[in-house]
Image 1: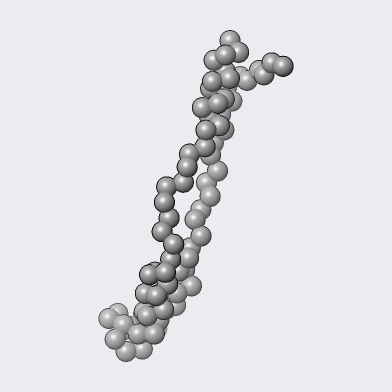
Image 2: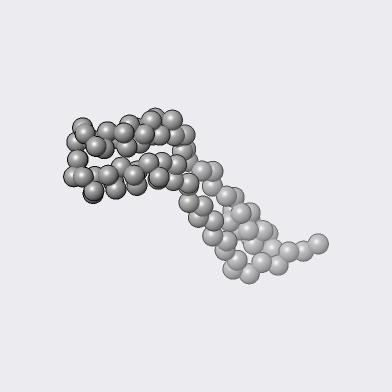
Length: 81
């Protein structure tokens, strides 16, 4: 079985990582905008605490492994010439 590949490139999918603490951050920013309590000492203390707890328990994202599809396509292209 022969595979004919002429100038084929596959771009990797751009999977956006999920925003783990987006709700807590928006609550914090909304509280700041509504009250002007930038130090989180009075009204926004609860929102700041929930954001802090979320950030502490959020999973750490590492580097995603690169797809090897372009390598294999190039290898097949060299062998078919």
